[in-house]
Amino acid sequence: MEQKNFEVIIIGGSYSGLSAAMSLGRSLRQVLVIDSGLPCNRQTPHSHNFITQDGEKPAIISAKAKLQVAIYKTIQFYNGLAVKALKTESGFEITTESGEIFTSRKVLFATGVRDLIPEIKGFADCWGISVLHCPYCHGYEVKNEKTAIIANGEMGFEYAKLISNWTKDLRLCTNGKSELSFEQTQVLEKKGISIFEEEIDSFDHKEGYIQNIIFKNKEKIDVKAIYARPPFEQHCPLPVDLGCEINEQGLLKVDAMQKTNIVGAYASGDCTTQMRSVAIAVSSGSFAGAVINKELIDEDV
Image (cartoon, rainbow, N blue to C red; front, side, top):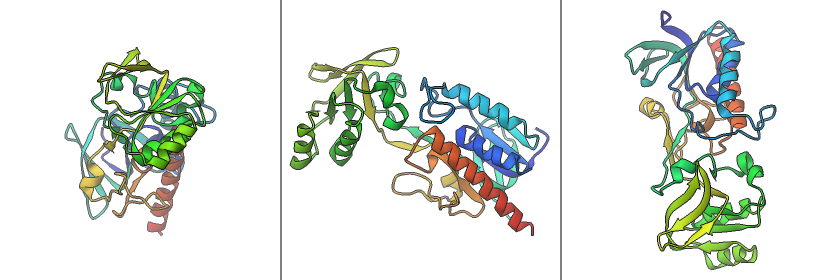
Protein backbone atom coordinates (compact mmCIF):
# COMPACT_ATOMS: atom_id res chain seq x y z
CA MET A 1 0.00 0.00 0.00
CA GLU A 2 1.53 3.29 -1.12
CA GLN A 3 -0.25 5.64 1.30
CA LYS A 4 1.20 5.41 4.80
CA ASN A 5 -0.25 8.42 6.61
CA PHE A 6 -3.94 8.83 7.42
CA GLU A 7 -6.15 11.05 9.50
CA VAL A 8 -7.75 8.04 11.21
CA ILE A 9 -6.79 4.39 11.50
CA ILE A 10 -9.59 1.99 12.46
CA ILE A 11 -8.43 -1.35 13.83
CA GLY A 12 -11.24 -3.83 13.33
CA GLY A 13 -13.34 -3.96 10.18
CA SER A 14 -16.55 -5.61 11.32
CA TYR A 15 -19.86 -3.88 12.06
CA SER A 16 -18.63 -1.16 14.40
CA GLY A 17 -15.42 -0.41 12.50
CA LEU A 18 -17.20 -0.25 9.14
CA SER A 19 -19.92 1.97 10.57
CA ALA A 20 -17.29 4.39 11.90
CA ALA A 21 -15.52 4.28 8.55
CA MET A 22 -18.71 5.26 6.76
CA SER A 23 -19.20 8.27 9.06
CA LEU A 24 -15.63 9.34 8.44
CA GLY A 25 -15.72 8.65 4.70
CA ARG A 26 -18.81 10.81 4.39
CA SER A 27 -16.85 13.47 6.29
CA LEU A 28 -14.12 13.34 3.61
CA ARG A 29 -11.52 11.92 6.02
CA GLN A 30 -8.50 9.87 4.98
CA VAL A 31 -9.12 6.55 6.72
CA LEU A 32 -7.40 3.17 6.88
CA VAL A 33 -9.34 0.14 8.10
CA ILE A 34 -7.12 -2.72 9.29
CA ASP A 35 -8.89 -6.05 9.73
CA SER A 36 -7.71 -9.63 10.18
CA GLY A 37 -11.03 -11.20 9.19
CA LEU A 38 -12.02 -13.00 12.41
CA PRO A 39 -15.36 -11.61 13.67
CA CYS A 40 -16.63 -13.21 16.88
CA ASN A 41 -19.97 -14.19 15.28
CA ARG A 42 -18.45 -15.98 12.28
CA GLN A 43 -20.11 -19.27 13.35
CA THR A 44 -23.55 -17.75 13.94
CA PRO A 45 -25.91 -18.73 11.10
CA HIS A 46 -28.26 -15.73 11.32
CA SER A 47 -28.25 -12.24 12.81
CA HIS A 48 -31.37 -10.82 14.45
CA ASN A 49 -32.80 -7.71 16.08
CA PHE A 50 -31.15 -5.38 13.56
CA ILE A 51 -33.82 -3.56 11.60
CA THR A 52 -33.71 -4.09 7.79
CA GLN A 53 -31.33 -7.05 8.25
CA ASP A 54 -33.30 -9.31 10.62
CA GLY A 55 -32.50 -12.96 9.90
CA GLU A 56 -29.66 -12.24 7.48
CA LYS A 57 -26.37 -14.15 7.61
CA PRO A 58 -23.70 -12.13 9.48
CA ALA A 59 -21.16 -12.54 6.68
CA ILE A 60 -23.62 -11.15 4.13
CA ILE A 61 -24.27 -8.08 6.30
CA SER A 62 -20.52 -7.50 6.64
CA ALA A 63 -19.85 -7.98 2.93
CA LYS A 64 -22.64 -5.59 1.95
CA ALA A 65 -21.40 -3.05 4.50
CA LYS A 66 -17.85 -3.22 3.18
CA LEU A 67 -19.02 -2.71 -0.41
CA GLN A 68 -20.96 0.37 0.64
CA VAL A 69 -18.08 1.78 2.69
CA ALA A 70 -15.64 1.19 -0.18
CA ILE A 71 -17.61 3.64 -2.34
CA TYR A 72 -16.03 6.45 -0.33
CA LYS A 73 -12.69 6.99 -2.06
CA THR A 74 -10.89 8.40 0.99
CA ILE A 75 -11.22 5.03 2.74
CA GLN A 76 -8.67 2.26 2.23
CA PHE A 77 -8.62 -1.30 3.55
CA TYR A 78 -5.71 -3.39 4.77
CA ASN A 79 -6.22 -7.13 5.19
CA GLY A 80 -3.92 -8.18 8.00
CA LEU A 81 -3.17 -8.05 11.69
CA ALA A 82 -2.07 -4.96 13.61
CA VAL A 83 0.57 -6.07 16.13
CA LYS A 84 1.94 -2.83 17.58
CA ALA A 85 0.55 0.60 18.47
CA LEU A 86 2.63 3.57 19.61
CA LYS A 87 1.62 7.06 20.69
CA THR A 88 3.64 9.72 18.89
CA GLU A 89 3.83 13.52 19.03
CA SER A 90 1.55 13.80 16.01
CA GLY A 91 -0.78 10.88 16.76
CA PHE A 92 -0.22 7.14 16.41
CA GLU A 93 2.01 4.63 14.68
CA ILE A 94 0.54 1.22 13.86
CA THR A 95 2.69 -1.73 12.77
CA THR A 96 1.23 -4.79 11.04
CA GLU A 97 2.31 -8.41 11.26
CA SER A 98 4.04 -8.10 7.88
CA GLY A 99 6.08 -5.15 9.11
CA GLU A 100 4.27 -2.31 7.38
CA ILE A 101 3.95 0.90 9.40
CA PHE A 102 1.06 3.35 9.13
CA THR A 103 0.53 6.62 10.97
CA SER A 104 -2.55 8.62 11.87
CA ARG A 105 -3.79 11.51 13.97
CA LYS A 106 -6.52 9.40 15.60
CA VAL A 107 -7.07 5.70 16.18
CA LEU A 108 -10.29 3.79 16.78
CA PHE A 109 -10.28 0.31 18.29
CA ALA A 110 -13.30 -1.66 17.08
CA THR A 111 -11.60 -4.94 17.88
CA GLY A 112 -14.28 -6.92 19.73
CA VAL A 113 -13.71 -9.61 22.32
CA ARG A 114 -12.71 -13.27 22.30
CA ASP A 115 -14.94 -15.72 24.18
CA LEU A 116 -13.08 -18.20 26.37
CA ILE A 117 -14.94 -21.39 25.56
CA PRO A 118 -15.17 -23.87 28.48
CA GLU A 119 -13.66 -27.31 28.12
CA ILE A 120 -16.97 -29.07 27.56
CA LYS A 121 -16.94 -31.37 24.55
CA GLY A 122 -19.29 -29.98 21.91
CA PHE A 123 -19.54 -26.48 23.41
CA ALA A 124 -17.35 -24.86 20.75
CA ASP A 125 -19.22 -26.66 17.96
CA CYS A 126 -22.58 -25.35 19.21
CA TRP A 127 -21.47 -21.83 20.19
CA GLY A 128 -23.49 -19.23 18.31
CA ILE A 129 -25.71 -21.89 16.73
CA SER A 130 -27.68 -23.49 19.56
CA VAL A 131 -25.58 -22.36 22.53
CA LEU A 132 -26.54 -18.72 22.75
CA HIS A 133 -25.54 -15.68 24.78
CA CYS A 134 -28.36 -13.22 24.14
CA PRO A 135 -32.13 -13.77 24.13
CA TYR A 136 -32.69 -10.46 22.33
CA CYS A 137 -30.52 -11.71 19.46
CA HIS A 138 -31.75 -15.31 19.31
CA GLY A 139 -34.48 -15.95 21.87
CA TYR A 140 -37.41 -15.62 19.49
CA GLU A 141 -36.11 -18.44 17.30
CA VAL A 142 -36.10 -20.88 20.25
CA LYS A 143 -39.17 -19.55 22.06
CA ASN A 144 -41.13 -22.16 24.05
CA GLU A 145 -38.47 -24.82 23.37
CA LYS A 146 -36.78 -27.04 25.94
CA THR A 147 -34.01 -24.77 27.13
CA ALA A 148 -31.12 -24.91 29.57
CA ILE A 149 -29.01 -22.20 31.15
CA ILE A 150 -25.42 -22.83 32.22
CA ALA A 151 -24.68 -20.43 35.05
CA ASN A 152 -24.48 -20.27 38.82
CA GLY A 153 -25.01 -17.91 41.74
CA GLU A 154 -26.40 -14.42 41.19
CA MET A 155 -25.77 -14.57 37.47
CA GLY A 156 -27.62 -17.87 37.18
CA PHE A 157 -30.57 -16.50 39.12
CA GLU A 158 -30.89 -13.34 37.03
CA TYR A 159 -30.27 -15.17 33.76
CA ALA A 160 -32.96 -17.74 34.56
CA LYS A 161 -35.50 -15.01 35.34
CA LEU A 162 -34.64 -13.27 32.06
CA ILE A 163 -34.87 -16.35 29.85
CA SER A 164 -38.19 -17.42 31.44
CA ASN A 165 -39.75 -14.62 29.38
CA TRP A 166 -39.09 -16.67 26.21
CA THR A 167 -39.82 -20.18 27.49
CA LYS A 168 -41.32 -21.83 30.54
CA ASP A 169 -39.65 -25.17 29.71
CA LEU A 170 -36.46 -24.19 31.45
CA ARG A 171 -33.76 -25.74 33.61
CA LEU A 172 -30.69 -24.20 35.25
CA CYS A 173 -27.43 -26.19 35.11
CA THR A 174 -24.97 -24.91 37.70
CA ASN A 175 -22.22 -27.30 36.53
CA GLY A 176 -21.28 -28.08 40.13
CA LYS A 177 -22.70 -27.28 43.55
CA SER A 178 -25.35 -24.56 43.41
CA GLU A 179 -24.31 -21.17 44.75
CA LEU A 180 -27.86 -19.83 44.75
CA SER A 181 -29.31 -18.70 48.06
CA PHE A 182 -32.25 -20.55 49.62
CA GLU A 183 -34.54 -17.66 48.66
CA GLN A 184 -33.30 -17.61 45.06
CA THR A 185 -33.79 -21.37 44.77
CA GLN A 186 -37.36 -21.03 46.03
CA VAL A 187 -38.13 -18.29 43.51
CA LEU A 188 -36.89 -20.41 40.60
CA GLU A 189 -38.67 -23.52 41.80
CA LYS A 190 -41.94 -21.57 42.06
CA LYS A 191 -41.40 -20.56 38.41
CA GLY A 192 -41.02 -24.24 37.50
CA ILE A 193 -37.29 -23.98 36.78
CA SER A 194 -35.40 -27.16 37.70
CA ILE A 195 -31.85 -26.88 39.03
CA PHE A 196 -29.22 -29.46 38.01
CA GLU A 197 -25.99 -29.44 40.04
CA GLU A 198 -24.17 -32.29 38.32
CA GLU A 199 -20.98 -31.37 36.43
CA ILE A 200 -21.39 -31.33 32.66
CA ASP A 201 -19.37 -33.76 30.58
CA SER A 202 -20.39 -32.99 26.99
CA PHE A 203 -23.04 -31.86 24.55
CA ASP A 204 -24.66 -34.30 22.18
CA HIS A 205 -25.37 -32.36 18.99
CA LYS A 206 -25.80 -32.60 15.23
CA GLU A 207 -23.78 -30.02 13.27
CA GLY A 208 -23.94 -27.57 16.15
CA TYR A 209 -27.59 -28.07 17.04
CA ILE A 210 -27.84 -29.32 20.61
CA GLN A 211 -29.83 -32.45 21.44
CA ASN A 212 -28.70 -33.49 24.90
CA ILE A 213 -26.60 -32.28 27.80
CA ILE A 214 -24.65 -35.22 29.15
CA PHE A 215 -23.46 -35.05 32.77
CA LYS A 216 -20.41 -36.71 34.26
CA ASN A 217 -22.63 -39.15 36.16
CA LYS A 218 -23.88 -40.32 32.69
CA GLU A 219 -27.33 -38.79 33.16
CA LYS A 220 -28.60 -36.55 30.38
CA ILE A 221 -31.35 -34.07 29.62
CA ASP A 222 -32.70 -33.29 26.17
CA VAL A 223 -32.80 -29.62 25.16
CA LYS A 224 -33.13 -27.59 21.97
CA ALA A 225 -31.22 -24.52 23.15
CA ILE A 226 -28.70 -23.49 25.80
CA TYR A 227 -27.86 -20.04 27.10
CA ALA A 228 -24.38 -19.40 28.45
CA ARG A 229 -22.10 -16.44 29.05
CA PRO A 230 -18.54 -17.72 29.08
CA PRO A 231 -15.78 -15.37 30.22
CA PHE A 232 -14.04 -13.31 27.56
CA GLU A 233 -10.91 -11.31 26.94
CA GLN A 234 -10.07 -8.42 24.65
CA HIS A 235 -9.60 -9.77 21.13
CA CYS A 236 -6.74 -7.35 20.52
CA PRO A 237 -4.00 -6.55 23.08
CA LEU A 238 -3.02 -3.23 21.45
CA PRO A 239 -5.35 -0.92 23.41
CA VAL A 240 -3.94 -2.18 26.70
CA ASP A 241 -0.40 -2.04 25.34
CA LEU A 242 -1.09 1.58 24.46
CA GLY A 243 -2.26 2.30 28.01
CA CYS A 244 -6.03 2.23 27.57
CA GLU A 245 -7.84 1.41 30.80
CA ILE A 246 -9.96 -1.70 31.26
CA ASN A 247 -13.01 -1.72 33.54
CA GLU A 248 -13.99 -4.39 36.07
CA GLN A 249 -15.87 -6.35 33.38
CA GLY A 250 -12.74 -6.57 31.21
CA LEU A 251 -14.05 -4.03 28.69
CA LEU A 252 -12.26 -0.99 27.34
CA LYS A 253 -13.24 2.00 29.43
CA VAL A 254 -14.73 4.80 27.32
CA ASP A 255 -16.64 7.97 28.12
CA ALA A 256 -19.89 9.16 26.55
CA MET A 257 -17.93 10.23 23.45
CA GLN A 258 -16.32 6.77 22.95
CA LYS A 259 -12.98 8.22 24.11
CA THR A 260 -10.48 6.10 26.01
CA ASN A 261 -8.15 7.62 28.60
CA ILE A 262 -5.45 7.93 25.90
CA VAL A 263 -5.84 11.24 24.06
CA GLY A 264 -6.75 10.60 20.43
CA ALA A 265 -7.63 6.94 20.97
CA TYR A 266 -11.26 5.84 20.76
CA ALA A 267 -13.06 2.50 21.07
CA SER A 268 -16.46 1.21 19.97
CA GLY A 269 -18.46 -1.97 19.62
CA ASP A 270 -18.19 -5.20 21.58
CA CYS A 271 -14.83 -4.34 23.13
CA THR A 272 -16.57 -1.57 25.12
CA THR A 273 -19.97 -2.96 26.15
CA GLN A 274 -21.71 -6.01 27.58
CA MET A 275 -24.61 -5.34 25.19
CA ARG A 276 -23.20 -7.35 22.32
CA SER A 277 -25.39 -6.99 19.25
CA VAL A 278 -24.93 -5.91 15.65
CA ALA A 279 -27.30 -2.97 16.10
CA ILE A 280 -25.44 -1.58 19.11
CA ALA A 281 -22.04 -2.11 17.46
CA VAL A 282 -23.20 -0.20 14.40
CA SER A 283 -24.63 2.60 16.53
CA SER A 284 -21.50 3.11 18.63
CA GLY A 285 -19.25 2.99 15.56
CA SER A 286 -21.30 5.57 13.69
CA PHE A 287 -21.25 7.86 16.72
CA ALA A 288 -17.49 7.40 17.25
CA GLY A 289 -16.85 8.36 13.63
CA ALA A 290 -18.82 11.57 14.02
CA VAL A 291 -17.05 12.44 17.28
CA ILE A 292 -13.62 11.87 15.73
CA ASN A 293 -14.46 14.07 12.75
CA LYS A 294 -15.62 16.89 15.04
CA GLU A 295 -12.43 16.65 17.10
CA LEU A 296 -10.30 16.87 13.94
CA ILE A 297 -12.26 19.94 12.86
CA ASP A 298 -11.78 21.63 16.25
CA GLU A 299 -8.03 20.91 16.21
CA ASP A 300 -7.65 22.50 12.79
CA VAL A 301 -9.30 25.79 13.71
